[in-house]
Length: 169
Length: 415
Image 1: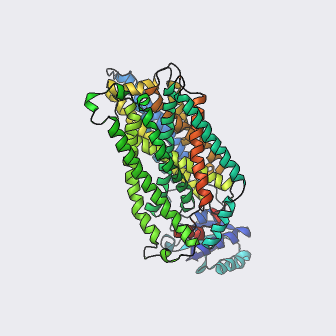
Image 2: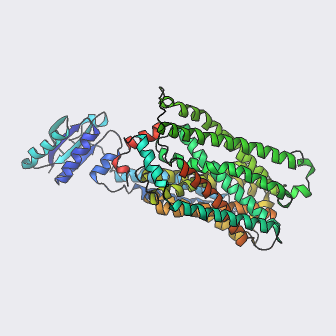
Image 3: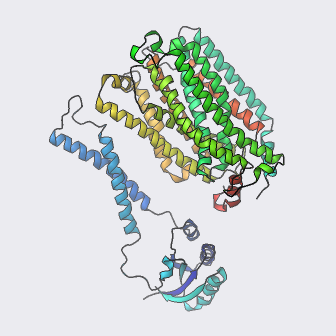
């Protein structure tokens, strides 16, 4: 069953952040926060853990180095690239291959993990979404039962919400 | 926002404590010990060791001081606000530069011990590598760069002193939000940046590369001045750490400065490593005897190979891995330790560039002579900085951008 809740639309970031803090203090459940831009204040106010994307990136980068060196060494051995005055498997120029693969795989894993971690692609927008959240407004969706509704609406309004309305997930 | 005078009083009071006298004595003793070791080394059985150590320390500390002053110039050029609390700390290293200019001339009497090409001249390079021209061009270059650095420090300090004296006329902001001093600094800083690259390249070519007169690398100058900026940032980090931990300047210097400075350090760690590799790869590929000899001696001979690996690990691998971590960048103590490691590594790197060209013995010439002469140089730099910060405020108290930074620093930026 879809959960019902309240959506607060905010014009100013500071108002949104203070609302988030109050809601969390009162232990209500925040379902989603919408912001047109990436913002540290929101992440901090929500007390979110740092994103795991960075570990994927690191893993991809390390894997890339191994793969770059591996590919270069493997081809050198298979095709016997013998150059006069150089060892059969020269490691010095392979640093460049390793480096390029490090960047490439770091980037690709970063992108992939970004998609996976943010559950993309999302083909249908949630009902509580408002196009203004991609424009010039911030929004927060708080899950609530009917008895809590008044209290949450009060918090949102007092923090400076432009508009508070009911919505479903 | 706190008024300029209040911050000024606050900082000056901090520096007026008695324990600094004791430090003055310690640093002076270091200088004395270093000077005595150097003099006794010159007249001892291995004068070359004393001279080469002197040269290593000269290029290390001079590059470092020019590099730190460059940080102040960069802040001005980029109109940066974040680094303003560190600006005066960077300028404090400028106090060593006039001393360093005098120390340059000490090399002159030791030229026969240092430069092979004096007793084994190379005819085709004689137009460039001859004693009068070398000392004239390096002397003029160092003088010009030192003068410019001193001017930058002078105008920056003068703003604070005149603000504290109540002279507000020069502090009026124009439409670009710059006072009279900032308008002067905005002209001087880019000039300093350009001259920094040119003169430090010259010093690298003349005082380091010419030690092996047959060897050449066009990138060597850039490698030296980028490495110098790297050491400069590490030295600045140490000074910033001391300011927060010992002098309790945590009200003004926040974790954010450490974070950003450490990010810059990581950047220059990568650039220094990159310049080394760029140079190394080309020499490796070309495989020309006159180019490879310099590198093979340092990376393949039994004497120097372990040192070469140490330098690569300490200057590049360790800082790179440590500085990837975000949290450690904001902690002064680990950053001080890391910076000391980097400075040690970069000193060894200069040692590796210079010593094998001069020293011909079987073992690495590293012992008490080297340690004590280096201590002497360290004492001289520390003495200059201490004298500077006792006399002048340790923060750019009247800098409008510093004031702006303090006014806008958010709570989450504080300790």
